[in-house]
Length: 288
Length: 288
Image (cartoon, chains in turn brown, yellow):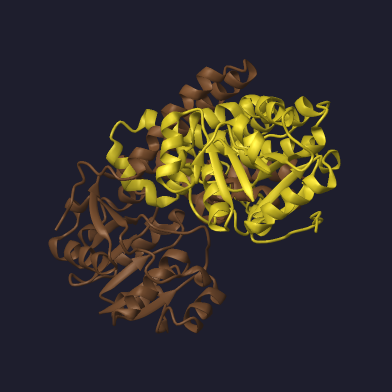
């Protein structure tokens, strides 16, 4: 199948790499000329091709740009597609994008996706094989996509080893704010706090083996990608951040009072997250 | 060499395992009877032996209890040692412990250590081989230990694959508060925030692949170990937590104003932590 990918960063580049290795013909575009060239040099894509040409030649177009531009790119693509073509996006927020394309006359040729995979690195050089294997792909408002469009996207994501799950765009953005986006804010703020205070950088390095490296890992993430996501998901993220500030203020009070018994019970409470992460999987809407 | 370990949790148990595999004769003690038996059953130690007997029979005694009891255990051990014996601890805080034993008549037989290694798991079953390999061991106030005592401890830690570094107890606790202890508070609060809001636990599980799992990993850590560390290192930790709250409040303001340009520059600033973690190592006081 001829597949076009717009946005050749970590996600777009990794999808290109995996899809190309499965025998598809991959065309790619990125607003940064050096990213286009790098993607070609790294063998992520077969050809550099712009959006309009992709709309003429590709069966599936994947939009992997920062979330702030996804709705406009998807709309521009939709306006040029025939019935046997499809477009999907991989953005980390879904409500605003789904709203923006809802009344597009060709809406049924679009599938709104969020593959839950990534690393803290960015750009075409961050692209890795099997990034999506064993991970989940959230699909929103699938009822607005035609059956053949849905089938093409679901099969493509399944071919990367992903499990497709359904969720409303509103639910997706709320869960993503708490579980994913808040983690990023938490890591960015932790990174800055430690950088501000630790004038002697070698001490950060020396002490990093104590758990700091993994807690702060996400602080290496791409500035444009994430400021765009935060802005897009502002209402839910503000709510999540207020909840987090409340919990940290509670910790501050316990420390100020040296209330060790309450600290112990706060930690016991937080320990429950381990049991969830270690594998309870309930009520998952699986689609065939 | 006959070595005794008091406290058979993650750190004590892992040290026992590695030292035993290097041919030493390992005796162990823990206030929890089932931990003593488990350590013997798991082959972490050769014998169960109480503190007084260890002081008669072992050349080196390692104190690996929660930090709140380390000073009293070390003092009790010191009072019973001969000149050719030594005691060391592995606590995550150092100032209060060093102060408490400073005027002990046998102080020179003690070395204050903090091996910077661990996982989020606890108890004898969490003990793993090679936990310390390639990691750093901070030694505080080495000038207060006799040469032969220092030599025994430094060689033992080096035999586990550790690099020994010197630091003052005050500096150690300040760096540990910012780089290690604050990360734990940040993870405990993040875990609780997400548990409070996400009534549907399957959504936490589904979304965890987005970076949440690694950011919240430390929230699985042991309640007694960590409330004890937090209480002990209160002044530095309060300062670190205030710095963190300040940064998060800054993030809240940027979100409320939807100031995407400033969010981008905040992230660019936090990104610097990556360059440090990826390997700048300066001014490290190496000891032979």
